[in-house]
Every structure is written in C-alpha cells, then in structure tokens.
Length: 264
Image (tube, rainbow, N blue to C red; front, side, top):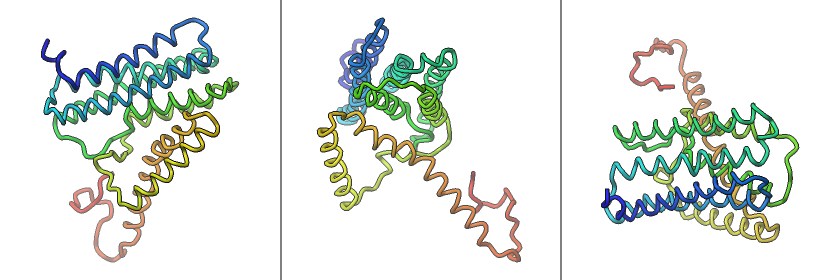
C-alpha cells in the first residue's frame, strides 16, 4: 500500500478527490451564497484538470495499474457525480422538492453505472470510442451551468429547466450514444487554427462580460449535443443505404444473418 501512496499518478487522483470533497464541504454549509456556489463549481472544473493529468503522468512514468484505475473511478464519482448533483440541488433543484431530489440522485447513480460499465469493458478491450457521455464531461457541464448563472447572480425561478438538462445528461451517461474521444479525433491544421480562433474569441468575451463559466459552457454544450447529432446522421445514412438498394436484387433487407448488414 505504501507503494501506491508514493505513486505520482495517484497524487493527482487524490487532488481530484480533494476538489470534490471540498466542493461538497462548501455546499453542505447552511445558507451558502452565490460566491460559495461559484467556488464549488470551479472546484469541479479543477478536479477535471487533475483527472486529465493523472492519466498523462501514469503513461509518462509507466506506472499504470489496476489500483490506479479503481482509485480514479472512486474519485470521479465524488467529484463529477456527487458534487455536481449537490451543486444543482443547492442552486435550484431544492425548489422542486422530492422531484428535484430524485433528479439529483439519478445523476449520481447513472454516473456510477457509467463508471462500472467502462471499467468492465476496459478489462476486456480498451474502447476506441466512448459509449455514452463520460461522467467527467457531464459533471463539468452541470458545474459550469450552475456557475455561469450564479456568477451573474440570477436566481432561477423555474428549476424544471435545470431538472430536464440534468435528467438528459444522466440518461446520456448510461446510453449507447457514441462520443468521440481525444484519441479518435484527427485534427488537421485548418481545424486547429479554427479552434485557436474560437478559443481567442471565447477569452475575449469572457473578459468582456466577466463570466468565464458561461464562456466555457458553450464548448461543453456543443460536445454534449455532438453525440446525439452524430447518431442521427449515422441513422439517416443507414436508411439511405437501405433505401438505395434495388427491390429486385434478391436480397432480404431484414435478414439478420447477412454478414454485411449494419448492427444497430
């Protein structure tokens, strides 16, 4: 066990866990104001930075281990599952009563199922594509959503909109909707230049309106919607492929034994 404590990747994982723990500590205080809510949201974002670094450090130091994988999942459920759910509850879901509590818990339990499914599949074959949105991205989206409105000191009078968004993120985590990962993205120089230009514009707007959380929320929202959008495009292409076949070709379009048929 001492060897695990001295492993550098586990230090970053522990820092991720501390960010989630401290965010929960702040939100458990009675009468938390807007500044505390914003700080808790940014702690979730800082936890995501440490969560990204622990994998990089593990590969650099050649210290990948099953212990580190399980520790990372346990940390993620706190920082990106429990903390964002409590953050949304403290901000506005409490106004919905028992329904808001159910939505907050749904986010946590779906995140736990998402992590368990990923760990089981990773033991068999490393996935090249994320099946369902990751709990990290879902937690960041919730944290930035709350922090962006709390920074502007806007008290939501209708918590149902937030409940719908959190419910949708919960279902996306346990869905089979494919999401691109950084390993599968192929960025050309033109795309990189466009991303750099977009990043510059976002920084300018964030400085102008003093709301960096709202600025960072935009790319997160685009990524969240990219999965369902790509699935709809794939479904449309499949239907066009089947519709383009000649009716007298002698092929049974509903023959499940056809090795060339697409799997839904």
